[in-house]
Image (cartoon, rainbow, N blue to C red; front, side):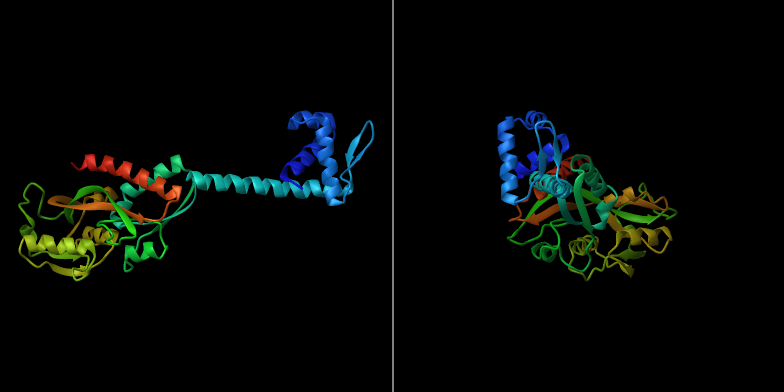
Length: 297
């Protein structure tokens, strides 16, 4: 029994006419008759009652018509889905990201996915205490955006773009961009920062910035979540340093003062992951990154 025989049976069960069915499936009438007879012999079931004028389904034929229509429909849909996975237009992709790109770059990228690969399902994760390296190597995620490269021989990294970091102050703060000289202007202010004792890239960048200007900040609140930091600044609980991308949060209660230092964004993935879905995501991400790179030049 073959899928082709089942397809012939289903068309004949609909048409109930050998000649019309033969035309529809592009075979001769004699070939169609042989295929149906062979199918009946293999099943040991009579599917059609036929005479010189009429063809009609037997009770067994009616039963198999309904069952095989459902099974064949599921088979076709499954095959179509497999083809989409092969083409990289369907399936699931799990992405880890830093909160700073959740206001501009990441939504733009997801919009591209929605337009170009509408069947692609995306799972997002904003990790905190688990390293991206562990998430990638343990197959918990497929792609990771990060502010630095993941140093592991089994992981590939590609730089997407660089953007400035900014001093973020409450809207009514005394310091303005026009009056700003350098970070020492606010050395006596209370800071809200990611923990400087952490080994994360951004904590290392902050330590480097404060070392450059020769002072230790008064960090009276610590948080790894930029959205929380912005909210606290808007309530005049302190100031902070964050990537430029947080400006796209459109928080009207804070102001951004651009600093000379920059932070980069990278995309990371497993070197042995050859799935087309992953390759497509990398391609879209790097193309969008080139646009952002031009923006911050």
